[in-house]
Amino acid sequence: MAELQRFLTNSAIAQRPAKFIGGEIYTRPSFGSNHPLSYTRQGSVVELCRRLGWLDEDTYLQSPIADFDTLIRVHKRDYVAALRAASERGSVSSAEREQYRYGTMENPIFKGVFERASTTVGGSMLAAQIALSGEIAFHPAGGTHHGRPDRASGFCYFNDPVYAILTFLDAGLTRVLYVDIDAHHGDGVFDHFEGDERVACISVHEAERWPYTGLIADQSSRALNIPVPSGVNDSEYALLMEQVVMPFARRFDPQAVVITCGADALAGDPLSHMQLSNNALWQAAIDLCALTPSAVVLGGGGYNPWTTVRCWAGLWGLLSGQEFPAALPQPARELLSGFDSDLVDEDDIEPWWIGSLSDPVTASEIRESVKSLTSELRETHALR
Figure 1: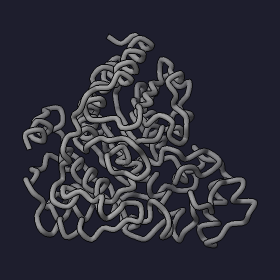
Figure 2: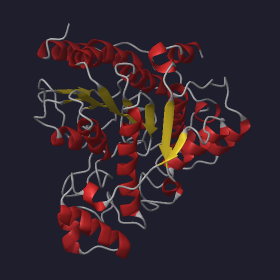
Figure 3: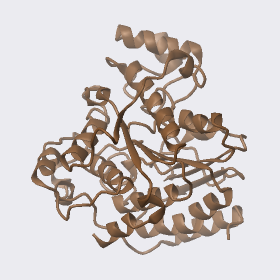
């Protein structure tokens, strides 16, 4: 609890109001029963926050839905129209599947998929608008960072972080920082803003993990890629944040920051081999929000319902200055006890996944591979 209190006393965060952006659509079943996103992540985060007494009508905002003209600013007109039609039909042709990459196991077509994806875009744009007024905006349904202009990719149909960044740029900002701490590289965002000197992009992701981009060789004055080795722990992550991420970010001197805080970097997630506690992600997000008065915090990946929901609920608690209970109250425990996942063995469920918001810190020895990675990146980017 002392570690959490340190977060809460960060003056750059504690004095700023925060807003939570959600929507009823995220409580509906989606993605089908055999998909890593078949559970209602965002709806469960909202419910856990409500059971903790952390949400009210003043802090919780309904996400708007982005219209067709907004969507085609980033995505190809034919792709947006085709996805809308497929969502209405509930089916796709083999030609559509081949061209647009939806209607697959990875990117299924389900009832309301177009509305859901459009709402996610609208929510991230609203988040940026709120952040421009000096508030922190939390939008856990956001973070669909793999979406491509002409196709679906990696469970993502549109790319909402791009829209959050564009909202800042449209307001006249000239230095917007994007930081992706999802286990998977933020390829769609990096590619969209490649060569745009107004945007700097940082990604800390697992090496040799899909989409296999963001290599150690992929560096530029506005792009920092940090592919971490399998099994990265809190101590190693802290070293990279302190020695590489934060110096790069401070040198850019951002006017606004957009953070994709994927929970798939946590120990126990079935789609990565990173071994972080939620404390590591919370620390990273809080430190990054403190860089600038305009901060948007999005969700991202996260395929273990217990670790993901607790991580994002706890992140909201920190951003909004809530008091953390030493142990979760019974209504919160009942919610977490009701979760189920085909991707997580029942024997692997840890007791703190039910009883506490905070994970035990995974402090451990810093491996030579991480020290070498840190040194190489500091030299490449001339960080001091």
